Image 1: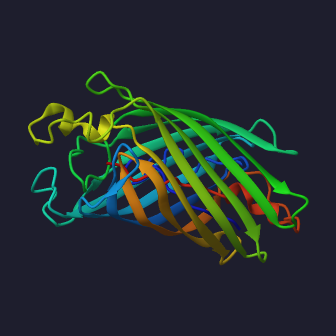
Image 2: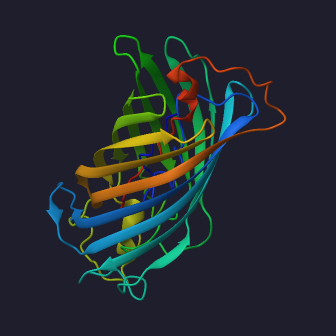
Length: 325
């Protein structure tokens, strides 16, 4: 069984966005699906400026609990829903505003996500386009280092591709590209391109390991500090800087999953920011969780599984992670 979490949702999670969260090249069969719950711990010690340089602007810890359901409506069409809860804490001398940046944890339900994907083909290359949306669960506070999200509506379109590699036994890859159309704020619409990729290897029938990479490029948006002459809490542009900034990043890491049973597996990943602009320089992004596969009355009669690691391919779920600010 295979499970991988990348993390994505500006801020707590591109998965919290997860938005493209759970997006993948393979889909579950009709009437089958998986429920997943994951804990995430993101720790930031530096901030990226617009030129890519790193600066100590305080320490940020973001914690999240992500629940998600991936369900096969047909053998080709799947629906994913994500429900994240997060909390954040900021320790430093540059708070955006208090009391939310007062050194204590503050939590909220974050952005809810819905994604529909349709598998066009599975051989020799799995190709699965998708469309999804992320929307704020409520009017939470976004103007804070420790904010759990950017409180923006977003529509994403993209495609997942994946394949098992015949030349390298027990290996596979999958890549996801998405283009996000963001809500306009102060006349600025910072649309974004995102790429999430993984290369995996089944060490045994139960244990899989993988290398992970995800990146975001913003088309438009403002740079810090040159486009923000005032950092006063009363300055309107500064109040919305997390929503209108040009947030770019590249995160690399690895993960593993272990199948406890045919329907229950545990998974985890660790990522680190190697490059970015105008956001959080993620020092460590840890994700651990458990997934439970299920069948409903709409599922086809269960048949004996073939002796192939690909049987669990549809349960490879990249969940993006992208710290913001």
